Length: 246
Ligand code: F6R
Image (tube, rainbow, N blue to C red; front, top):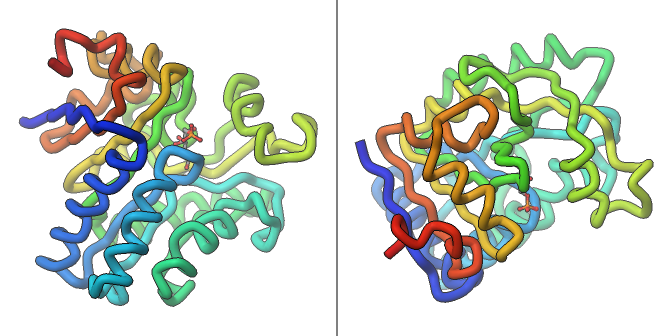
């Protein structure tokens, strides 16, 4: 059982630190399977990975699995998570878009798509899963109250999450209301979890997740039950964790 909290000097340094660990995983296992998050938190990881690829890292055999996708946005919409990950990860690293799996975003077939995605991830076995954390403690789009036993499923976004993500859309009304997300049990099957958080606004969620109690009210608190977790935070995100991060 290991949960390590790493205090990084900056958001950029946090990203670089995780990217270096991913590079080690890829060097040891070129066909590694890596779970990827969207949102702003993991962007420094992908930027640092792109630098490492420029410096010679070969990530061409890696398979990537997204955590989640909005329901109702066409795949080509600039804010669909497929588009976001193609922009942030696939193109900068010069990878084949077919190496990236993202849940489908079709409301009409969501339940069948969820089952198919769960099966695909189960067959692949994720080596490392990158996670951000929502202000309400969500991981993936598993909002508070989601059962720890959940697998990939259709979910309704809370108004907190929709408001937080409205920055990527022209108005709050345009933020999708539903998504397909890996479940908490799906995430917990990954070999290692790498959670990244930065900024003071994430401090309460990080503290609740790491200090406990472990509860479905704070989905990220489940990481305490995983055998291999690394939480990389900047000083602001760690500010309510003093006794843990010191
Ligand atoms: C995104 C995801 C979410 C985000 C979380 C934090 O794929 O699954 O859990 O990681 O909402 O988002 P940011 O990083 O934008 O604050």
